[in-house]
Length: 77
Image 1 (cartoon, rainbow, N blue to C red):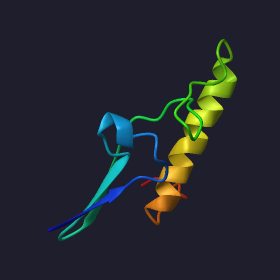
Image 2 (cartoon, rainbow, N blue to C red; image 1 turned 60 degrees about the vertical axis):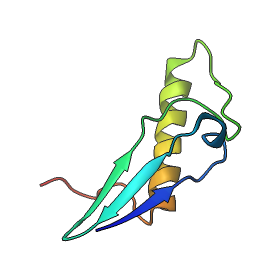
Image 3 (tube, one colour; image 1 turned 180 degrees about the vertical axis):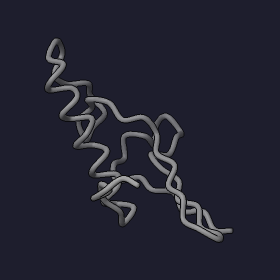
């Protein structure tokens, strides 16, 4: 089994956590941390704007998936 840590930003370094862990063995599994409305420095943005917060959280998840060599699923089964 292999483990690869994925950190597309440096903001997590001072807190000692990892944005995602990719685990490969028989299959590939990507464990992602929760994403929020934080910019690349870790500062919270879009205070009082839920639409902006959700959009940025989803953008952050998309960045994390891309750093892991993955993307949003194109279909659900």
